[in-house]
Image (tube, rainbow, N blue to C red; front, side):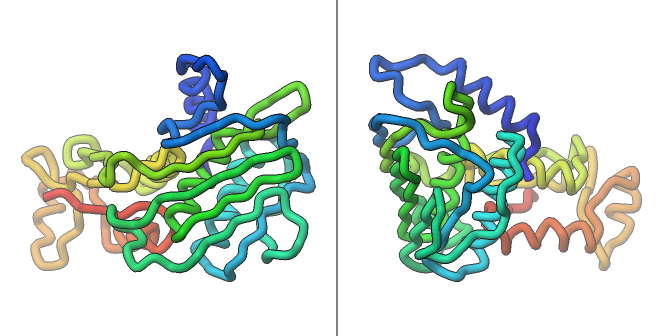
Length: 247
C-alpha cells in the first residue's frame, strides 16, 4: 500500500507545478492529452470500482487503488471490486490480456473520463489500466465539496518506453520492505523498470548456494537470501514492474 508520506510528497510536487491558462488538473507525468470538464466527482464511502473482466491482475489493481484512496481521503472504502453492471463510481474496461505485460513493450495507453456522475477508464491491456488508476489517484484532491476529482478527459500513453530507476544495493543495502515501498512509488508516477545493482567491490548482495563465501565475506551479513529473493520475485506476478538485476 502506498504510504501517506508518498502521497503527501506527490501532492506537494503537483501543487508546485506551474498552472496553465486553462488551470487543468495536474498529473505526473503530464498526460499526452487532457481537457477540463464541468463539475466534481465526489468520493464518499459508497465509492466502488467495477471491472468488465474477472481477472486477477485487475482485481488486485482495483483493491490496491481502493486502499490508496482510503489512505489519501481517510474514508473506509470497499476494497473488493464489483463486476460490470453493478453500481460503481469508477468503471474499468480492459479489452484483453497483453502478451507483453510486465515488459517495456506493454501497451500502456488508456483513456480516463471523469464526470459528476462517475468515472470511466478504458485500456487495451492491463498495463493501461494500471496507468489510468495511477492518474485517477493523483486527480483526487480536497475541494469545497469534499474529497473527489475534477471533471476531466484524458487520453494518455508514455512518451518513452523505458522509464527506469536503478537502486545501488551493492553499496547501500535496502531491505525488501524498502524495495516494495519504492515499487509503490514507481507505480504512482508510472515508472516501469526497476534495476537492482546487486554486486560490486563494496558488497555482494545475493545469496549463492554454489559459492556461499561470496555473501559470507562480501556482504557484512546484509544480502538477499533465497526466501527474500522469492518474496521480491513474487512482485513480478502482481501488477507492478519488471526487475532487471544488476551485474
